[in-house]
Length: 139
Image (cartoon, rainbow, N blue to C red; front, top):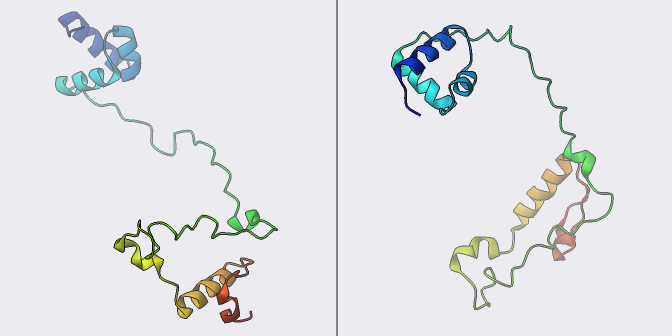
C-alpha cells in the first residue's frame, strides 16, 4: 500500500502520540515497521528520546555457567578416539595430503611436557595411554 496524504498525516499523528513504529505499522496496515521508520526519517520527524539506562527495567541475569571442572567425568575418557591418522594425515596412505604434515608428525618431548604441565595447572586428571607414558614426569 502506498503513502497517501491521509496515511502520512495519520503516521505523523500516531508518531506524535508516542506510538512505536510497530504499533503504527499495525494501525496503518499494509506497511512494515521498517517502512514506518524509513518514512519517519524521510519526513524528518523529530526522534523521541528513549528512557535512560537507569530508568529501563533490567532483565534478570542468567545464572553463571558451572565450571568445566565440575563436569569432568570420573572415568577415563579416550580423547584420541576421534583421531584417524590413517586417512589424510598418514604419509603411507593414498589419501595423504601434504598440507596435513604438521599434524601428522609425532609431538615433541617439549610439546608433551607442556601439555601435561597445562593439564596439571587446570587440575585435570589424566594418564597417557601411549609410548610417551614413560616420558611423562611424575607430578
